[in-house]
Image (cartoon, rainbow, N blue to C red; front, side, top):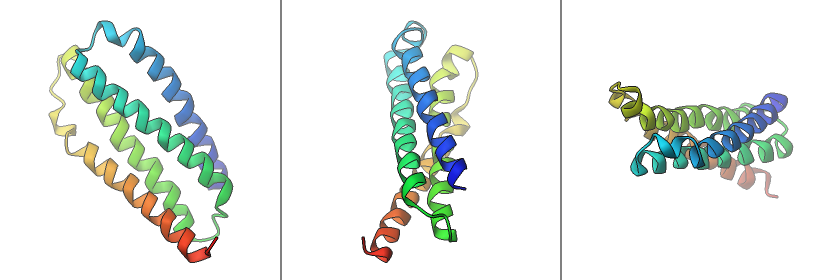
Amino acid sequence: MKTATLVIGALYGLLSVILGAFGAHAFRKILSVERLTSFETGVRYQMYAAFFLLIVGFILKFDNGSDKWISWLMILGTILFSFSIYALSFQDYWGVNLKFLGPITPLGGLLMILSWGLLIYHFLKVKL
């Protein structure tokens, strides 16, 4: 799980830089200001998740279920949060109605919050 956390963290970081560059240049030409702002929020939170996963990948031992859940909740939460925002940002451009993804975004955010909460619990438990 340690290796997966580090690799996914690095992948999230890589994709954030790529998507951020496209957002700043190519997507600015095809998305409305409101949609581009949403897209950029997804990119920003994906980068936060990348840093989070890289940090916990180095500090956690992954020798218990709690440590693993810290990682999994952030990984899954980021997929639901950021990637639903990406799809919603492009729905007008693609000409499809993706409004059903609307409730997915806050669910992803909740998983990310739970991951942070478990990390706080971990720190309190080990008494750094």
